[in-house]
Structure formats: C-alpha cells, structure tokens
Image (cartoon, rainbow, N blue to C red; front, side, top):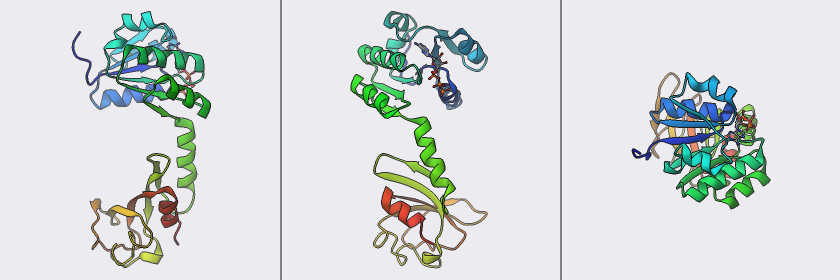
Length: 219
Ligand code: ATP
C-alpha cells in the first residue's frame, strides 16, 4: 500500500467527524472515513472520496480497510463511549503514532488518555467556553491553547490607547504579549514594542489565562 503519511483516518461521521473530514479534504489530505451506519456513510459518499461502512470496535474489520497503515487518526465517536474506547484501543494496538479522540465528558476523556489516545478534544465543552468568553466584554475570539495559556482577539482598552506596546507596559505590567495589531479597515500586522495601540484597533494577545483575561477585561 502507498504511504499513508499525510492521510487521515476518521472514525465516526457525526457532525464533528463530518466537519473534520470535509476540512481535512479541503486542506488537501486524503481522508478515509469509517462509520458503522450505512445512512451516515451514504450521506457523505458524494463529498468524500473514501467512505467505508465498518464497525470500528472490530480490529479485524479495521485492519481489512487498512486502518493500521495510517500515521494519523481521529476517533470521532462520542455517545457510544464503549465504541469510542474500543476503536481508540484498536488504533493504539496497531501502533498508529498520532491518535486524536473526541470525548463528551471528562471521565470519558481520562479513559481515552489512559487507553493511549495522544490528544483528547472536548468539542462541546471547548465551544461553550469560547462562546462564553466572546459574549462578554470586548473579547472577539478566545482560544484555549492548553490549561494555562490562551490566545485572545480583543480591542485596545482605553487604559493603554495612544501608547506604544512598551510604554503601555503590556509585557512588564500586564505580563501578556501582543502578537499582532489590526487598524480599522486594515490587515493584521506583527506587533513590535514600538507599535502604537489606538482605540478601535484589534489586537491578538497571548498569555497565561488569568493575565490575558485581565488585560481583555480592562476598560
Ligand atoms: P456529533 O456530536 O459529532 O454529531 P454524536 O455524539 O451526536 O456526534 P456519536 O454517537 O458520537 O454522535 O456518533 C458519531 C458517529 O459515529 C455516528 O455516525 C455513528 O454511526 C458512528 N459510530 C458509532 N459507533 C460506531 C462504531 N462502532 N464504528 C463506527 N462508527 C460508529
């Protein structure tokens, strides 16, 4: 079989799995999607080049479709926790080097990690956090990078407006980094210590969650 280096194995064609498969395809990756449901497979067969109906809890069925040849796999089964764990375990057993798995609860996530998933994502929980942050204050977008760090897109607070990043004490006082700035009607450009922060500008800042949130909450 040809090298599967850049190809993605996707198990589960729910809303999350479908969005992932379509985006991966748009990004130029070959996706092999597996779902136990004939209906779910049929619904995606026009949009995805490789869709196979198979039970991902059955290691032999997975091996038959070449799942053991992939270097990257995503297990996107949520509600059937047992199936999610068994499919993840089969991929771990095959030695797939990069396995991401979707979890719906923290216990589910902890088990997937124990079983050997390399990264566990919580789409519903993470989107809830993101929406809450973007609904409040000046935050436009909010991305949790891990438990301690975030990226926040926000507007320039009045408190630092008219000052350069250095003079505003963005690093020294607020202990965050402004990575880029967008003037009204312009594009994002990389920020330097000399970049002037004006009211109405958008900034993307990076920092420890508590500190970045405190900066974004300035008036
Ligand atoms: P989403 O929120 O992404 O829509 P969901 O949580 O509502 O997903 P799930 O129960 O996670 O739905 O199922 C996602 C997909 O996984 C479904 O299309 C389902 O048929 C498929 N699936 C469930 N069990 C298996 C299995 N053992 N093998 C292969 N696919 C499976």
